Amino acid sequence: MQVIESMYVVALRDYPEELPAKERIGAETRYAKALEKQLGGPEQVAAALDTMYSLEESQPEVVSPGDLTLLKAWGKASAAAKQAGFRDLGEAEGAYFEVRLV
Image (cartoon, rainbow, N blue to C red; front, top):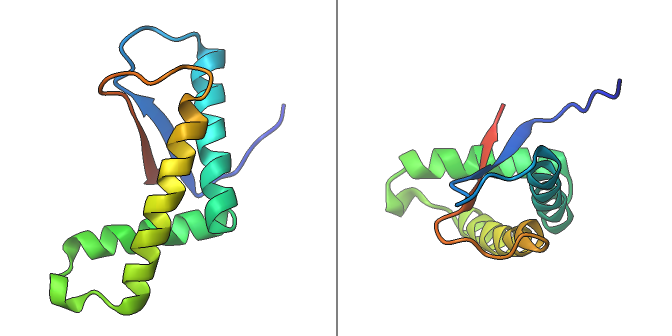
């Protein structure tokens, strides 16, 4: 049995129809790989998520130029990841990928 350690998890949410586990896992894996490719690896994805969580709690005037750069990078990475994740499924109204730290 292969064990994959991860610092974050990706879950496909609100897909309008029941997906076989293989297709759902494939979409979530494509999403995660695209995020990692865009941001530089799993550690960078986890670090970006951690920063994003802390920015949600911050006042707008506290956001640094580095944080703004990260926000832009996250936006670009998540758009590419969404495209990769839905590649074999097609877009589904209301469906999204949830990414969270573990």
